[in-house]
Amino acid sequence: MTTKIQTANAPAAIGPYSQAMVCGNLVFTSGQIPINPATGNVEAVGIEAQTEQVCKNLAAVLQAAGSDLTKAIKTTCFLQDMADFAAFNDVYARYFTEKPARSCVAVKTLPKNVLVEVEVIAEKKED
Image (cartoon, rainbow, N blue to C red; front, side, top):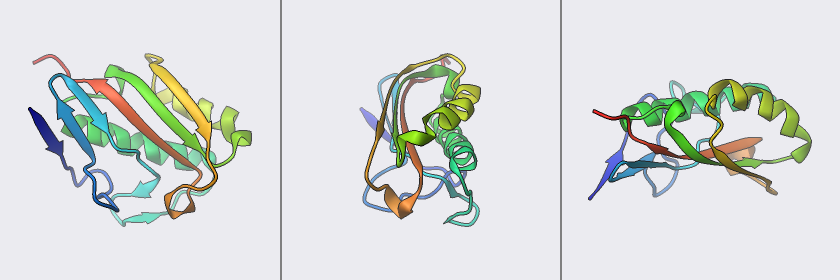
């Protein structure tokens, strides 16, 4: 059985997808970009600020799904420029303190021309 996750505390989907899906004890988030959920706009400038917003968005989606960033098992990270890798890691490490498995790749273009997108697979918290 799967459950769709939707929260106003994270950006609404900008396409035909859900913010996350729960299947059993696992949460699969869609990629989050640095959209401010209050305004629906990308306001953060620079890789650090954009990564900060992405992590806040992921935390909100995971919370709505009954999980949190400490329960992350795997992340997939997309950077517009691999030159941002070190600065991205500095912010990422403050949020993903349990050091989940991770892939990080550079891509040509991301939605809304942002610098970073991250998706997460996490366990739900135990009831």
